[in-house]
Length: 327
Image (cartoon, rainbow, N blue to C red; front, side, top):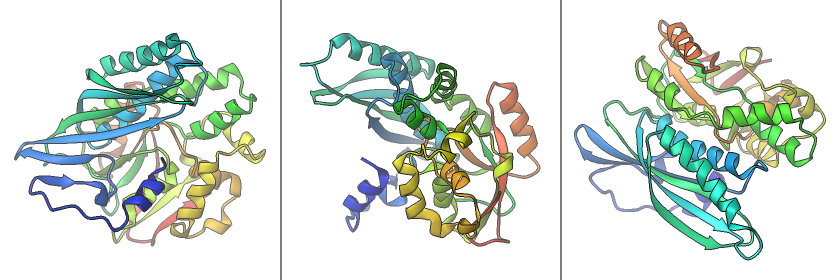
């Protein structure tokens, strides 16, 4: 289910104002948050989807990283997981599911997150994911909609996995390109989140189904700020631009553009293939972080020293309304 579909289903629905409920579905945050005491809050999220790569072990790893990412995006620490499984046990060998679970469990162990159990059903199509619970100090929680004027925008993974996955489905991706995409999709956002918490961060989210620009819209749309994005400063995965020019673009990118292009001031003036990349839906993408200008370079260098291919690509500012793309 796409986030937009869920938003439409919940439209107009309001639940009671529970006194300890800090964040629910109405805030469009990365995860829900429930206060336990003044220094501790429970953070919860859930994500599952069909396979996007052929190898079941890699799929399990990607699904786990993707689910854990929402917890890391809020500056929280994941602690427990429950699996969600749809599997055609009447047509496929159970060994395939075992490999998916092995991949997920390896990433959960890397995240020091305990698998408690889960639920499975027989279905005509494989779908797999996890519900993750974690903890955060509510006073140090990273929100996605609190940008600060002048803060620098840092992204912690290259862009383009959605397009590469589309190329994979068309059987046009080289093994080398597939391996590059898998490398980033199976990289936890754990270290990036831990490093970010050392610095003066105003806001943060992860890049998933709405694409980079779609999630950036979420960060500024309820504020008085806009953002300037420099396309040429972004790290784009190899061959992505060439495949985009060939029309190998996921349907989700077109949906994202239709839904959020009105927030891009100069949308019509940017080459279509570049907009496709900026709106490319990512699976297990990196974090988008707003950091104080005097700390941005130090945070960037610490991330790079830790093996994170982060980059600076823009700035939150009151000098523009909405989002201005320089390309």
